[in-house]
Each structure stands twice: as structure tokens, then as C-alpha cells.
Length: 212
Image (cartoon, rainbow, N blue to C red):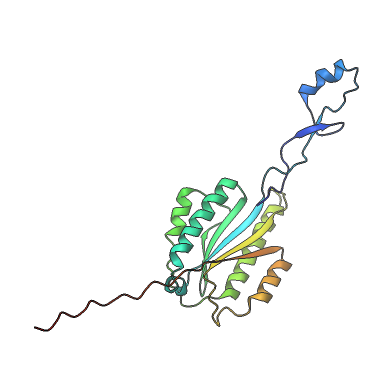
């Protein structure tokens, strides 16, 4: 995730937003010829994203062996995004319905990560991709509206939807192509993170004791 907004003043320019006080004395000593004494915000140094992390909480995740990988992936992503200070990050779990586990307006923390990880059940009966996309686009649209409202950040936000799933399509998925295109039309970029895991081996029954 590249920095998107310039907040630091830097450089030597003939015009700018603020004087570089270290250049003022040399400027005077040069007979006012060395006039590159101004600073500007030119290089992006901070990130302003609006991210939504959506985790497949259906039973197929447990049956495919992807559930432990999903928990590990969520912990890694939430920790890394907090360190990068990317902006607002929300987390939802989805199966036949969508559950908001971490509101985007709340900051990420170790306690928030632990709480989110404890909310997964991996017991949902089906995976409704249409329900997820509708809820996710609506939630991100609300965040975009708050950023542009009076009292908001006023900064343009790049919006990303990260979907963590085992990728096992069922009839309840439908065709994700139109859903992704509809999200893109709303300014939301969608990224699928497919977890490929071997299903757990069947439990072996204990052998019957030999007959006497």
C-alpha cells in the first residue's frame, strides 16, 4: 500500500508554503541570489485508505482445512495494517449473512484483533456473495460520505475490499463477475485472498481387539 497523501514539508523551492529557516541566513549572505528557501509538500508520506476485510465464516472453511489459515491471515493483516497506519479498517464475517466484527471508525489494536478472532465460528451453512458485496459496498459508501462531510478528514480515500475465502464456489455464490464490476463502479477495488489448504484427514476408528 503506497503512501497517498503528502503531509511533510521538504525540498528547496523559490516558492512554497513555508520558509526553510536554515536557508534564510545563506540567502541574505549570498546577496539574495540563493533564493530557494521555501518548503513544499510534494512527496506522499502518509496513507489514507478505507479497507474492509471480509472473512468467509462458512462451514466449508472448516471442512477444507482453511479455517486455521484464515485466523492466521486475519491476525497478520490486522497487525500489519495497524503498523502501516493505512487509515480506516473494518472487519466483517460472512456466510449466509454478514456480521460486522470491527467498525472501520474504531482503531486497530491488539485487543481488537483478539476480540475479532474470537468471533469466528466457521459454521455458516452457505456463502452468499451477493449479500457480502451489497453490505460491503454500502459500508464503504458510508465511510466515503463521512470523510467528505463537514468535520470529516476531507481527504480522498482509496477503498479496498479484501475477501479471505477458500474459494469453493457453491450455487449460493452466484456469478461474482457482475458483483465485482458493480463495486468497481462505486470506486471499490476488490481483492480475493484464496486459502488453499488440505482437508483434515478422517479420524481413524480404533481397531477392534482380537477375539479371545
